[in-house]
Structures are given as structure tokens and as C-alpha cells.
Image 1 (cartoon, protein in one colour):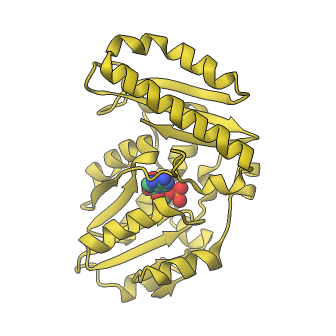
Image 2 (spheres, rainbow, N blue to C red):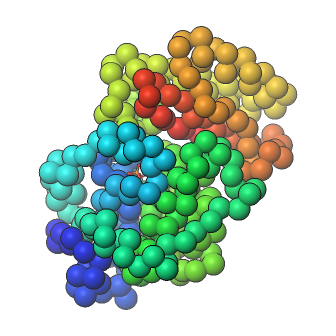
Length: 269
Ligand code: AMP
């Protein structure tokens, strides 16, 4: 595996005319990331992973500071997976060309995480734009766990780049909790609570698939989860194609965001 500390060096050495798959991450790798990497390795000739904890997408400095950092362990995992290239850019490398960085989110997209984390997706999209301006990867691999993120990245790519998005399904622990780097910050008790949210939400989703009218009972689900001392930020039903509130029995999805001891987790079913 070749490790690059700057995009310039990467650009000089990697032949993007070949079939390159790109997997952007913030590190603290887990089985969700690994499934994206394996999909890229299956589909592409070369796989490039990036690890960059993007400060501008954290709307709270405390959240940025406590975000798990496990670089040595990550490098060992990536070597074992026989990843071809790893990019670990410095903040200045990403942010030197301010011109490329301006991204705004439309009013209709300021929902779910965009509503509760002002500036978050502007930060995510700015970095993705910067990456794709220089990294002419044929494919970018993104996880369905961050469903709204994919929705917004799709718009940026559609208007500006040739890179194709490959969407990978959410990988979960046996207890149904979705793998997340933030799980490293949870105690065993909190993991159990997070698993409870996944289990009850999935069950509710199945109930609504069976009978769409059950969606009216979503407030009961909210109360049930909150009765366990879990702070819900949002629990919403949205159209899975465009994230609008107009749904029918075949196109709805349930989105949840919640806090456990100041650690924010998201999921969708
Ligand atoms: P992150 O490091 O959290 O920014 O995530 C990097 C990529 O991994 C994003 O495309 C995420 O959607 C994806 N990802 C994170 N968790 C999972 C998971 N449990 N299953 C599948 N993909 C995931």
C-alpha cells in the first residue's frame, strides 16, 4: 500500500485513467468501512481510501475533539486488506483552494441532519468537491447508513463530476446496531441502548410495511425509545427517493437520530 500525505503527490503517482475506486472515510475503521473497501476491490482495478477528519463538518468543537482517532490500527487494517493507496491529507492541503469550497444546501434540503447540524453538510460537500476535483476516480463508494449524505453528494456529482456513486448497504452488529466510528465512544450499557433503538425501529418499519396505516403510531415508538432514557433528536418518515414528506406504502423510509451521553448516532430503515 502506498501512503500519500498530499493530494498533489497522489495525483502525480496514481493513474486515474485506470479503473480506480475511491472510499472516503474519517478513519477509526470498522466493518462498515471494510465492506465499502471490499466492494471497491471487487469492482475496481485499484482502490484508494482516504482518512480525513474534516473539521468543517463538525458543528461542535467538542465533537471534533473527541472523534475517535486510530491511525496506526487503521493502516494495519488497510494493509491487510491489500488496499492500493491511502491518502491522509493535511487540513491545509484540503483547504488551500477556497474557491472550490463553497457549497450551499437548498432550503428544501435543510431537513433531518441538515436541520439539526447547521453547516455539517456544507462541510462534507466542500471536502467531497475538493477531493473529486483532484481525484478523478471512476467510482466513489458510499454507505447507506449516511442516507441523506448520499442524497446530497448525488446532486454535487450530477452537476460537476463524472465519478459514479456505488451505494453500499449498512453493515450491522449481531445486535442490529449499525457499525459506526462513534460506537467506540459508547459504554456497554449505551451500546445496548443504541441496539434497542435499531431493533424497535426496524420492528416498527416492518409493521408499517405490513400495514402502512401503522405509521400513524410513530409517536408511540418515540415515547417507547425515550422511556429508556434515550434522547431522540428526530424520528421521521420520508420518501426514500427524494426525502420529501410525501410517502406511500412502497417508498417510505424511517430516519432516526439520537443521543447517548452526548454521542450522536443516526440510522435508517
Ligand atoms: P465515516 O468514516 O463515518 O465518514 O464513513 C465513511 C463511509 O463509510 C461513508 O460512506 C459511510 O456511509 C460509510 N459507513 C459508515 N458506517 C457504515 C456502516 N455501518 N455500513 C456501511 N457503510 C458505512
